[in-house]
Length: 246
Image 1: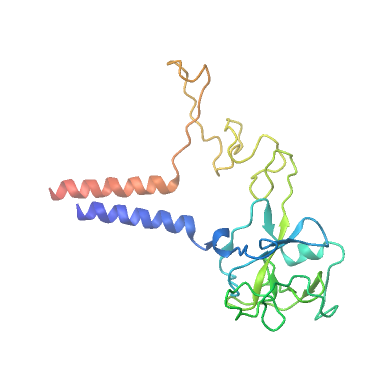
Image 2: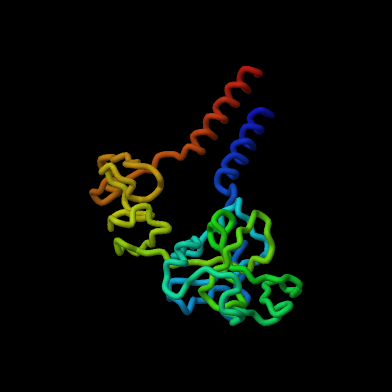
């Protein structure tokens, strides 16, 4: 029995680590306590937004979950918009995003007003470098590279994701934004494509209707996930070990 319980614990921990490794969800990182609810629209382009973070520490080894309908912009993607350019302290001070209660003229999302937060980070700030200074003119990108653990982060630069096929799902969640019938939750059919965006192709079992409960329609049953199969294997192994010991 001890071996069986251990197998169940291992399975639970394994599944949990697969699901959560390196992901910082929006309910953890997104600060919404200012007059813009932590999500200010840019004056450069209506698809650009600045999302505030709850901490000033930049983590380049984790993934920040994007807000729905948006993605975390890279430096070059931001620079592809008009009225943006690189520079060092270019344009002087204009305070394109300031909060009340900031320290030393800088904004802060810290309730004790002890942090100097001023950097809006890009998805590749740790590799190619670049950030927006909250007290400069909007659109000027400083070129510094920020390693993991760097302080001073105020937020993330977000850009609205497109919906090229018009199915109501933007490209950050739509696994194929060129085909209208493919989106998360779509009906899976056997056509060599992943219609429901679950990472599996043609993962359906068609069962003929013989009980009158599905109104003459076939229905689909998703294949079990690899984690579930792994867990069942552990449980089966534990059960055999337990029977032998008995």
